[in-house]
Length: 363
Image (cartoon, rainbow, N blue to C red):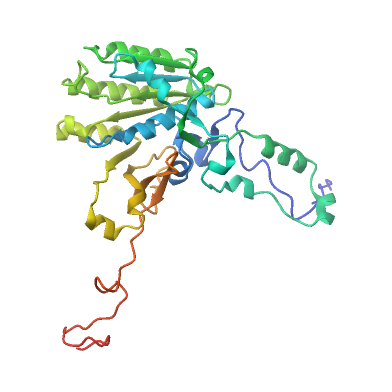
């Protein structure tokens, strides 16, 4: 009878169950999905880990507030900090100047908002006398956990990104202002993504593509809706076969309703940002912490890659807040408590006939 390996202890951990990645800024998920961080810790938690590799992310802009720039800047900064190649397309004449506005990662722990990391809570905490029963690879696992790089950084909006991250080898910028045809941009994206094939995801660093205000009026192709739709279809096909993630922001008000719907249908992850009007008394009475909000984030679609099970979120609308006016934070909308002087709350008993006000039901 073959000898079986004795079980050392019931406290032993199966380290082979969770796959690990050798590349910084990459997280393995279920069903063979590999995530890259969005640059916002709260958004990564909401989406179940971040942006899946091979996905196309679209952000609907708001004409009243440039909140989409917050998402775009954090996305770009996170990739550069993790040494992930970046292709940035902008309707401005000098797109490289935009890199100077990217936020840098915070290094002061006291200024960071408290974000609990579930990975740090996985360590086994047992009495010292049980250490002799632990497997030999437990110590190596703990040392690897302590020395691992941060998956998602906290970016300080008041701190610019250091210059050594902005080298031309990492960030490639292109202007789409004078491009009458999108063939040049398509060829640029194809050449960029050809360096990161999908079957090489385990050894090469993932890449990122960021396209800002794709249908902006200053672009020469702003009235070529079918050409822009064809470009998005081609980009999605190239992204799906590449070890990369692409994000496109566009103002839906500049498109026809049918074209806007077609664009949104092509997105794997669809987000939209909205502004909050100043001194909106009706909204202030409904939402708690209204004074601290700078905008709203809506999640319309979540990526479903390698699965047919729909993703059901606990909430789809979140408030955008700036912690200490420096860190981007997303929070669920909470109903403000109702003051007794302004009316009855939801839990107050009432009369069906309206004649009695004693709190008992009068039928």
